[in-house]
Amino acid sequence: MERKSYLFILIILVLLGTIAIILTTKTTIPTNQYRNYVISGKITSAEKITGKMPDFVHVYYPFYNLDFLCRSSRIELTKISWINEHTGEYEILLNVPVGLHQVILTTDCTTCDYINLSLKDIPTSVDLKWGDRKCPSNFKISDNKLGIVKDTRTFLNKRETNLVNKPYTSTEKFDIGQDIERSRQSISQSEDSSDANESLLHAYYAQWFSWRVLFRIELYDLKYCLNKINILLEKYNDSCFIPDYSSHDKYRSANSTYHSTNNRYFDYFPYEKKEPEKMIAEILSMRSLVEWLSDANNNCENSESVMKNTFEFQEPYCKARKFKIQINYIIWAIVFIYLGLLIEKFIRWKK
Image (cartoon, one colour):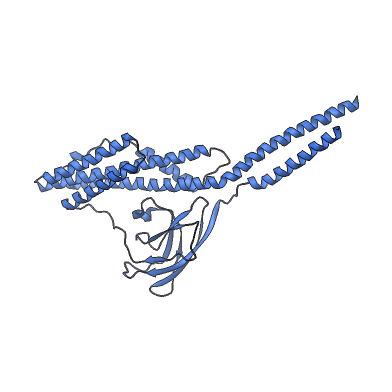
């Protein structure tokens, strides 16, 4: 009976050891957590050609605001092989994190001719056009009061409608609503004023407040995006899970932007500016802050997406690693029990 017990324990140890060896190969997360994709296709010119013939196809990370695609991070570019004046071909090799599932392709980041491409389902040929649509040119402050008032009112109506679906707190929505109201009051003052200079000045006040509305929206969007990443990092708070370096770096940059911007510029009012030229400078300054936050939002959204998918890719390996550790504990426990039985048998034999 005793011999059978020893044999049984040995068999269990062999089985558990075999499982541990198999798990070792399954628990090692691949060191290269990047994937290669080949994308190719044709380049054709639009019927209405705008701009010169492009030389390259650019591949970008998804961007928060496609009007500023040039500000996004470029992944790769490849030279176009032109067959004639209207048709060309390209082929490009991408090496991207496993967590990145979408990219943007374009022949020119200043145009609105781009393709959002899912890396999960790449067609045999990804065809692009060039020369069709140009994105808005550099932003300029108009001196047309009626145009400013019309554009600002349209902008405010759109933002107020979109605000309903935002996950903001009641305080955050109230603060945005306050700036919307201030902008509308300035519009009324602009329309009621008979003095041309004063009327233009109030139109600029209205435009400035509309930009601060967007500033608040961008800032609050960034806050909620960072919260999503913080929840992810807490959920996968284990040395086994390693975020992609680039995405984590972008997260830290976005986080730094948020903390350096939060609660700033909210207590400022531009009413002491009595010259249109000074108000133009104020509007441009607020717009640059909005662009800064827009870039941070883009970095944050990309980071959140890549981190989430990277952690999901690593999860099966990490679960197997935990199981392996538990198996190792069981093996060592059985080994000690087995050694204890051998020692006990040896002592009996000596006696």
